[in-house]
Image (tube, rainbow, N blue to C red; front, side):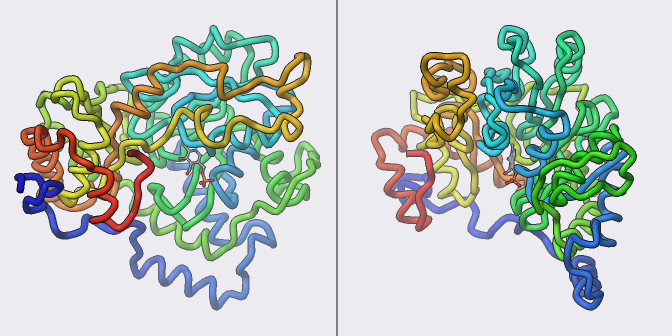
Length: 432
Ligand SMILES: Cc1ncc(COP(=O)(O)O)c(C=O)c1O
C-alpha cells in the first residue's frame, strides 16, 4: 500500500468542490416569472428576459449589440454568416480547441485552416497566422482558451493588413477583458456559449455580440428563420433557421450575469493563491502571466505537467492519481481538432474540400501542430473553474493534492492507473 490514494492511501479530499451550475432564489423567481407570463418562446422576438439579458451582456463586454441564440456553435455559425463566409472560403482556426469551433465553418462548406497554438497561452499563435493566409482566406477565428486570450493586438493588426474579418470564440471567456475591452468586442463579432459547464449557463444557449448594426441584423435574421431583424435598417433577408433561445433559458442567465463580477474576482483571487503554492515544484509549470488581460475569465485553471521532470511518469497517470485524491481534473481535455474522430470527412458532404483540386483536402493528415500535440497529449492539465468558487481551504487541498502526487510519483510507475481510476470512479476518461 502506498501513500497515494491510487495505490491504497487515504485520499486527500473526501468532500465535493462547489457544484456547478449554481442556482439561487433569483433564478427560481425569474423562472416563475416566465412560467406565469405565458410568454415562453423566443417569439415574439426576443422575449423580455432575453432582451434585458442581451442588453446587459453587450454592456459587460463593451459591445453595442448582443443577441441570444440556442447554442455556442450556432453563435459561431451565425457570426460566420454575418461576415458572409461562403462555400470555399478559408477560415483560420487554432488546432487546439473544441470541435465546436470548427464544425460551423465546415457546415457552411467553408474550409478550416488549422494553425498551431502559442505554448505560453495555448491560444492561436499569432506569429504563425500570416504563413497560413491564402487568396481564399476570409477570416480568423481565434479562441480565448481556458484562462488566456489569443493575442488580439497581433490578430487585429494582421486582419487589417490582409483585409480579413475576425470572429472571437469566447466560449471560455465570459466577462473577460483585454486592455479594458470586453471579450468578443474587438473582432467583428464575438460568439459565446452558455452550455452547462460554462461561466454563465442556461444548460444550452449562446450569444453573439458585435459593434456593427449590419452584422447584428444579419445574425438576428439568420437565427429567426430569415425574418426581418428588429431594427431592419439594412433590409437583409437571409435563409436561416429557428435558432432562438427560449425565455426559460434566458431567464436563468440574468442572475448569473449579475453574479459574474463577484465570481470572477473570487476565482482570480483563489487562482493567485494556487500559484503562490505552486512556485516551481519539479514537474509543474504555470502559464506565463499576461498583463494585457485586465479581467480574468477562467473557464478552467490550466497548468503544465512536465513528465520529463518527474521520472517520465505520463500525464495520464498524474491526472488519474490527482482525481483519486478527490480533485476532479482533466488531461486530454481537447485533441488537436484535425486529429479528432470527426476526421477524415466524407468529401461528398463537404464539396469545397475538393474544389480546384484533383483530390479532396485530407484535413486529418495535412497538418502538423507540435504545440497543440504537446498541450493535448502530454502537458496541459485543466482544473474546472468551480473549484475556485469556494474558500482558500479548497485551493489549499488542490495544491496539497498536486504536491502529494508529485512527491510520491514513483508509486505510479508501471501502475495500471487507467483500470484503477475507471473502476474507482465508475467511469472512463478519454485519456488512457
Ligand atoms: C471553445 C468552444 N467553442 C465553441 C463551443 C460551442 O458551444 P456549444 O456547446 O454551446 O454549442 C464550445 C462549447 O462547448 C467551446 O468550448
